[in-house]
Figure 1: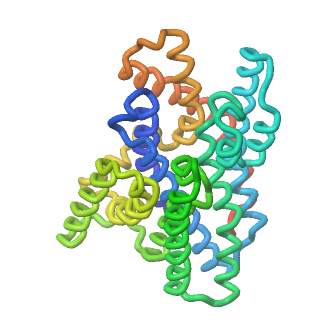
Figure 2: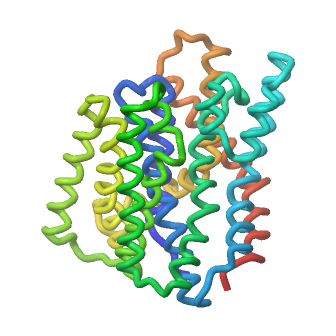
Length: 348
């Protein structure tokens, strides 16, 4: 399959947003939006790959898919997870065993919801988003297999996924009016956030076959849509009504990301997004998963060693640099060998 341009660049943007927010700028930088971008990208990429497999083989090998995903996600995940468990044992003499087991089973988000942040391994709260993605990886290919066996058209698949997205929105509305900890549930729970990934899947189905390297200027229609989407996204950041933030915000952001992703993957050499494909930006994107896993522990250690009074911009610089260095070593020692293993389970 030909290269999908700009994805590493988008990963770089998303991880930068998350690191800056967690370094002390969460009051002005929407860190949660960085996670939403990761979700959308995952849905787009996985759905694109699975649709390609269906085109080539008329089916999906669930076994090979799960092995490929496990080799991509789990080695860095458990490296950081075990390392932070060792740190917690060294500091506190123990780890929360039940919580650690739930995290090993990719249930961090629900463990936090039912047991609190203190019930999980130190520095691993952000693993909640990986739980959401792993639940998606587990279920979505099975859904696509069902669609294929029922001979659903792409249009019919999109309609079903849109229905699922509507259900997620309605469920968040119910949670808001019913659950005592609704803000945590609508943000962390897979049942409330899966639509952020499905919008990426819908995008992949809508624009399948239109991934390219077109160099011509963006037309006025797309330019207008991009401007409108930018204003809509800005509105979702600034409008602070709690009902909106827990319900409609995720739906609107998922829809608003589509024009930007279309620009990035359809016109990767356009001046508006060519920089996403610069080698050093792609390098950050390559390390973004490891940077995402490690940056919160790094922030804690920076503030612990230097002091809580350290300026946030210093925290950003140190954290980003150290996370990049760790990402480099994790890529060399863990991810590259895993890539070689994954090649044995390719879709063809």
